[in-house]
Amino acid sequence: MTCHHEFVLTPLLIQPKTVKARLEEVRRSGLLRDEDIPNLWQVQLGVLRMWHRVFFRSETIGISSAPVRETRRARLLSKRPLRFPFLVRERAVAPLDFSGLISPPWRIKRHLLGAYHDGAQFIYDLELLVAHSGALESLREEAVAVRDDLVPRSTWLKDLVVYQGYHARLVEALDVFVPGRIDDPDISFFAYLRWCARQPETLRETVQAHAEGRFTIANGVAVEARGNVAYA
Image (cartoon, rainbow, N blue to C red; front, top):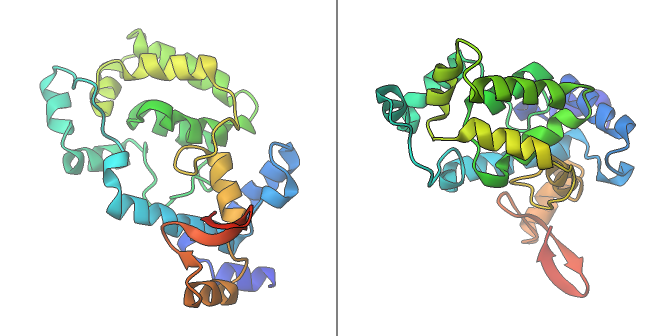
């Protein structure tokens, strides 16, 4: 498949040239093996999987059992449809960038500071920042500043993430963060890339795998694992 065909067949990536450049950055970083770096078609299959999660497993995104902040604004923004336009205005979300591969470090940091993440879900975006020198350190400084009300926008960002104690938990997550420890593509960027790299490499292979009952958008392609069929 030529580069031109890659770009034509991957419209869901929005900026496929940027995605390709970011994948090359990951390759050069040595954080993943070469065989764990997907091509653009495989990344697009990963994007489809993420869309499926949004539409059919939305309860796994942006909600928490933690108490909502007691401010009137936080209580209002706890309703996700009302929160969304403010997240877009804040540039804390990039609605068309489902993989995170077209977002520069500054935008990923805005996302972590302004969009709620539950539990281990910090890890995906922290792994996106690993290859960028100084990004995690500057994110920690900004998170501490919001946590401790050291910047004018602290109250706004705390209300925008809705739930109490979020920025303190972000600082704690940064302090214990070790990349590559989780193998769940919902949670880990590196696991997401590995999942993508196990998928069919072309449109033709994908159609064939689907026709044979070996591929679904939600689970990917079924592979042989120790003699038994399992989903990659």
